[in-house]
Image: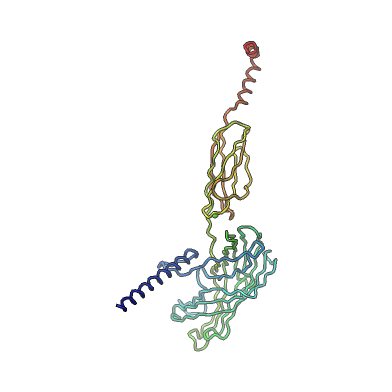
Length: 368
Ligand code: CA
């Protein structure tokens, strides 16, 4: 009886553990960008990279998040037998000795820092079964273009100017050297997108299309003995994922559908942002006049109210669109207003008629 109870307790514990594990994986997948291979297996998860505001309306770079390959791993091909490669899956991490200098060739900043390059090494072909994990100390020099601190989205180009790393005292690689960047004629352009989140933190989405060069020489007694060569190749290094943001809805427009010319009528513009972001409106009145972007308002009702008058009769299409604080815009909405002949214009018409038929005017004078 006691054993049965213990068995039930163990079963319940296992169930609870498996439920919480699957819940945490699910949570992680929601916040991550994952690559799936042909067999539908998740092969790489790149997490969101969120860092605090540095107090100046932007984020300090490099952000403290890894750069990983979102495409191919690094390869060693040259110097190996046909159909044999060494795949090196990279992760750049642990940025330290960071020096930020304003200016540089792209006009933003020069970022100099050291890092650790972790490599998961897998041999193929003749080297199947050769597996290692390497840790290579590397140093970076990155140039960035200017950004505008305080902007909700700061997008600017960048480049690896110099990347160098070398491994010493390894039992398999008697020489292992990696280089990339403009200074070696290995151009590695990239981009940063810093998006301000409602929390006040920044989402970092950064990549480099790196052209790298790996020189190696195998050690005596290692599976790599007698192999040496230099391989140049390209891949994409990615840090963080795109900030997921939905545009605000196409605004609804509410107000009179007809009116008199020269008289102002109020119209209400309402857009809903599913992320709860504040929204700004841009309005074209259909007569050639338009507003600038309005100040940001809370999403949804009561909306934004602005009045307008049309000088001449006709049918006008009012158009409006909304944007959120990340400058993502909605579709245009349209609303028709007809300005018919007004009292003023019919009075003018009577006046014109009477001028041409003075007899009629005299007759009217006698009657009234
Ligand atoms: Ca939004």
